[in-house]
Image 1 (cartoon, rainbow, N blue to C red):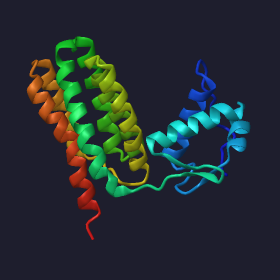
Image 2 (cartoon, helix red, strand yellow):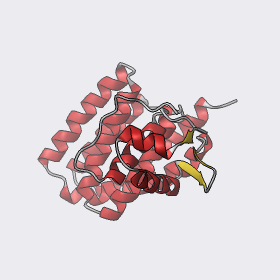
Image 3 (cartoon, helix red, strand yellow):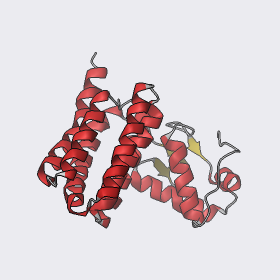
Length: 220
């Protein structure tokens, strides 16, 4: 099982949290490939923890759909079903749109300046075709808005769905385009103007459009 030896070991986390976050990242970025069999002894040794938190983290990953556990047999990384993007993005779009609308009354000058700065970095990443960096910057942009909404339940669900978005990106199901830069600009503009309804509409379109782009790229 190809476990890197140079991974970082997070601090101030429980052993279960550390194992969960690291395994999830390895599955998302393809270090652990779809169909890969996972050995809890090897994982525990690599992470410097006992088998119990590893098993607990694998159970959480199964709930999220990243692994499948076969009691007494094996635990395997799930396959990437690119078509699942059609089910993943609509609920995420609705939640992101709601978060944006709820965030509008809480947005101040500092938040707007942060969003503008992040979008400039996003633009640079897109223009230089550094799409992985663009993905991380795009997440940063949206996370600031979700945080500003101040709703724990929306935050938690979006966080879970976002992990699947990252995995789809690494397996070439999601394409980032120039249009996202313009949509970010419109989101900022309407937030500044306090137009929550318009912000919500643009945010939803920003996410749902990725489905059409996926279909366009995968025609035939």
